[in-house]
Amino acid sequence: MNFIKDAFNQSLTRRAFVGSAASLLTLPAFSSAVSSENNALTVQQVIDIILKNIPVPPIANTTDTLKAGSPDQPVTGIVTTMFTTLQVIRKAIALKANFIIAHEPTFYNHLDETAWLENDKVWQFKNDLLKKNDIAVWRFHDYWHSHKPDGVLMGVLTALGWEKQYNSDKPTILSIPTTSLQEIVKRCKEKLEIAHLRVIGDLSQPCTRIGLIPGAAGGRRQMQLLQSESPDVLLCGESPEWETIEYMRDAQEAKIKQALIVLGHSVSEEPGMSYLVPWLQPKVQGIPVTHVPSKDPFQWL
Image 1 (spheres, rainbow, N blue to C red):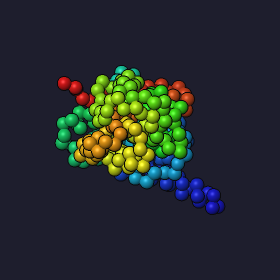
Image 2 (tube, rainbow, N blue to C red; image 1 turned 180 degrees about the vertical axis):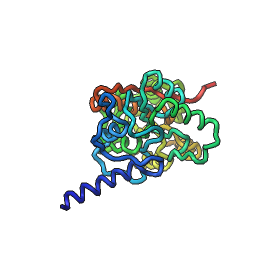
Image 3 (tube, one colour; image 1 turned 135 degrees about the vertical axis):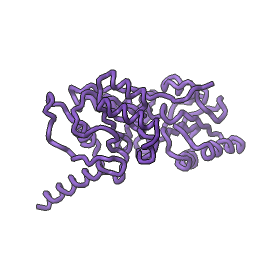
Image 4 (cartoon, helix red, strand yellow; image 1 turned 120 degrees about the vertical axis):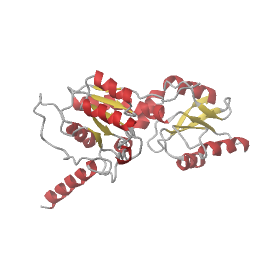
C-alpha cells in the first residue's frame, strides 16, 4: 500500500511540475492515451518521454512549461531552438512542424508572464501566429541543464571540438594543449559561427586552462569561477557590463593573466539545442526533429 501511495504522490508531484506558474494549462503527467490521429504522439506524451529520460526529481517552480498550444494535440514535427522567434515559427510552419521546443522564454520575461503584454502589438502578433497555426511551444531549460552531463554544455563542447576534454568532476573547466588567446578566439568564431566577439585580454597570452559558462549565469558565478579555478580564459555567453566586464578590466591593470571572451547569450547555448536533436530523435521515431537556430539578433555596424 505504501508503494501505491508513493506512486500516487509522485504522479501528483509531476502534475504540479507541468502546471507551474509559467503555464496557463494543467497537464496530466505520463498519460498513456495515444492520439487517435494515426496513433501520433501528443505534445504531452513527447514531454513525458523527455522527462522520463532525465532522472532527476521534479524541479520546483520550473520554467519548463507549455507556453502555447494544447498538450493533447498530435505532433506532426518538432523544431528545437534557442528562442521562439517569428522566423523560427515561420520555419516550423514551412516544415509542417507544430511543436517547438525552446531553451529560453518566448514572451520576453523569465516566467513568460503575459498579463502585462495583452495590449502589446508585438505580443499579439506572435501569439496570433502561434494560435493560427496550432503550434505548441514548450520551454526546455531547467531539465536540459539537469541532464547528466548538462545537455547545453555538451552541445557547446561538441561544437567546439572539445568534448573529449569534458571532466564530470569539473564540468566548467577544460584543459587543452597550450594555444594563444587569439587562436581560441578564431576557433570560437569558426566553430560556433559567430561573426564578432568581445574580448578582454592579451591576444598573445598562452592558454591551457579554459573556463566555460555559456548563457547568462550571472556575474558573481563567473567571477567566482575566475577566483576559484584560475582559468587562463573564461568563455561566457553574456555578462552585465558593470560586473564581470569591469572585474576583468581591473584584472588587466593588476597584471593578472586572465582573459574573457563574451560569445553572446543566444549563440553560446544554441549548440545545446542542436545537440538535442540526435538525443531526442530515437525516442520519438516517426516524428521528424529539426534544429532551427534563432541566431544572433544584432547587426554589427
